[in-house]
Every structure is written in C-alpha cells, then in structure tokens.
Length: 431
Image 1: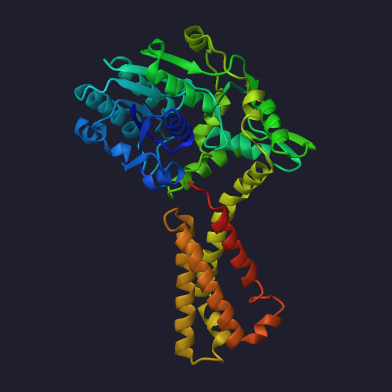
Image 2: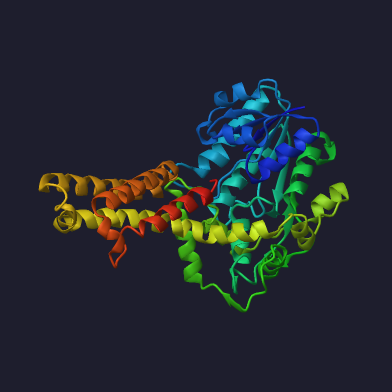
C-alpha cells in the first residue's frame, strides 16, 4: 500500500513511518524539511510542503497521485509568528479531504487529541475538533484516533516538560501534582494506525487511545525519575502558578523567534486540565487493553542519556538567550563607553584606527548576539562568535599581551566564552 504520511518525521509520525515501512508499505512522507525525514528514514520518499499553505483542493492533487491511503500526523501546539492553527489543522485538512474524495483515495487516518471538542479550553484542541468533525461527516473510510499522553524516546510538548522535571537534581519539582493522565506508548499508536489501514472494524470509528486507568503527574514524574537513574529527591515542592505561567509565556515568545519548543503555555494548560479519556470504545472494538503507565515507561528504553538530556534541556534555552544577551551587552557597552574603549588600544594605533576597530567590533558583537536568539541564524552566529573570539584572543595577545595579567582577566575570560559557544553548538535543540 502506498501511504502518504503528513508530518512523517515528528514524534508520532516517526513511529508511524517506521511501523509502516516494517510492514512492507511504501511511505511517502510530507513535511516542511524533507531532509530531516530522509536522514531518519532513507527508504521512504520525502516531499517538501508547508501544510498551512495547502488550503485549497488543487494544492493536494499532486501529492495524491498513486496514493492508497493518507495518515495525518501533523499539527502544532499553538499559533506563532509562522504558524496558523486554523490553516494548519483545519483548512488544510478540509482541503485534503475534498481532494481525496475527488481522486478516489478513500482511506484516511486522522491523529487527533484527547479532549478535542468545540468547547475545549485551548485553540489547539478546538481546531483539532473542527477538522475531526469535517472528516467524520465525509464519505471517506476514515478513522480518528485520539491518543493520550504519548510516551516515547523522543519528546515534545507535555512529555518534554515531564522529562525536564524528572531530571531535576535534588528537587522534585511538581508541575500539576494532582492532575491525572492516561498514557499510551508511541509504538502502540503506530500499530493502531497500521491496523486501521487494513481492518474494516476500525473504519468510520473515533476512539481514545489510552490505558485503562489514570496516573497522577506526580507519580509519573517520579517513575520517569527512577528510570533515568536520577537520585531520589531530597526536597519536593509544587511550582507556583505564576512561575508556570511565566515559563509558558517565555516559551511562546521564543517560538516567535523560530524555535519549535514544546514548552508552551498550551502544553501547561493541557497538563493542568489532565489528559484523560475513555479506553472502552477501542477495547470494545478490538478486545485489546493497552499497557499501563509503568509498562509504557519501562518500554521507553530510558537511561543515563535521558538524565543528561533532561538537564541539558533545563539549561539550554536560558543559556542560549543569556549568551546572546552577553554579546548584545558587550557590543552596547563598547558603543556607550566608546572613548574609554578607544583609550585601551590608542597607545597601539592612531586615534582614527582605534575608533574604527572599537565601533566595528561593537557592532559585530551586537549582530552576533541578536543572531544567536533566532533559530535560522543561531548556528551561524555561534560559529561567528568563535571566529570573532579567536580574533580578539589573537589580537589581544599580539597587541596588548599585558591584558593576560590584568586582574579582571579580559583575555582569560574569552576562553570560557568560546567553550560556551561550543557547548551550545553541541546541545542546540533539534527544533
């Protein structure tokens, strides 16, 4: 079967693509960055598309040629500078459904979300509900799957927040300790997707895909903490609401700089409301009961690398923006105290040359700092910071070697600055 998978290299999409390929299907993946898909699954065919631009039927027709089924694993947590939920999760899917009907591609699997109703508390869930309703009222052979809190080796959204909380040293930081969740392993989601393509009993069915019982976020976090090898916490406390809200707002602001962080206000709101559903519909159709949370956690293959990941995620975002601020303030101080900066090197160069050096260096510092904050220019800016720092180090050593003995250590401090840039290059978030 030739299966078109939208968002085929995302959290759920990767598992779906892997499972379909293992089952002998041909996968045609669609996403904004097909290079990522090719690197993960070279045996699949990858096509580039920004789904939120595909809001008319004609846009989908070239993608449906020779296709037997479509699986939609695409989505976004919330609106941001370059993402519209209405376009991505509603209009694009409606246009896709229309195109499938006109081209006689009947089989469609929609990955939705628990709590997707017209009156849901988040725009993410409300837009999912609108698309679900359009799919359910169509003539397609559809299946709508609403997974619970998806546990996987990869993380995004709420699972990222939990992984960070589990990796905290000393402290057990409780996000929403009383909130209840029902989990599902990502491999089970992929298995049910593959089953939906060939099992008529799942056709024209909408069901929650969750374990039978719920678990508190606090217990789930402690379970994750144990599996990643973190020491038992010495102090437990619940994160105050204003801090949680502030973290969510910061995540939202960061997203407007191009970062696809899962730490968003929507993720916090979903966790606060709980992620629970009704397992009975799926069990009634298939006779299967999904694994519970401890089993799902055990099958995630967690280890010391996940402890390191969680702690890096804890500091990576603050480090990125503080490092950018360091360069911005460094440049701003040079401009603000121009004469004082020129005086530092005027004994080596004439005054005009000194002013040119200081002004150019300060402007470069400012540009590098600003570029570090933006996702598209982040890597280039870090590399530029290494080059410029090396230049400062070489020039300082040659022209003002006495600064190596300066009590404030202006040359010595360049070395940890360069190491910080190297760390951020190595630890930069994939998204």
